[in-house]
Image 1 (cartoon, one colour):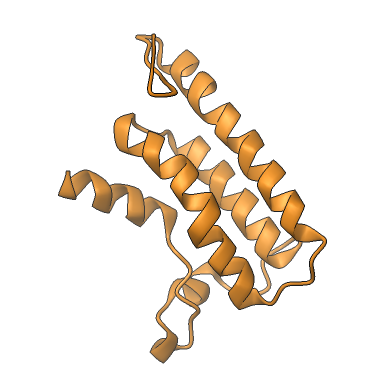
Image 2: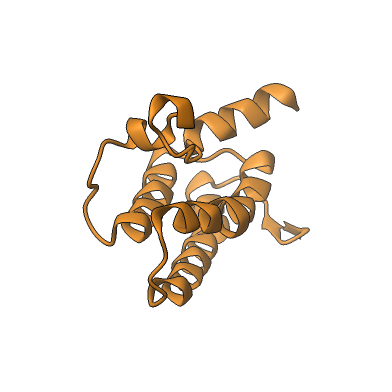
Length: 118
């Protein structure tokens, strides 16, 4: 069954596949459009915050995510930011400005927080 562009089924594997494979393809496609522009680290993080995170947070608010999907989303985002392997620890990037970070959103924390609030 498909409601508001979200697939619902009893089979967990099929549900993950239907909902998040499409999202991962869309994320990769969106990030590839931005790769050729030589953006600063701040701009890349802003793109992630404004156009990447809302795409999967809507579905993550309705259905649960597996750790593998979260890892794939994280790796896609960080490979866009660093153009390959991470240059610094992710925790340093996630930290606040006053602690030397760039306030990059932490995906798992966002999902957990959204579940607590709703």
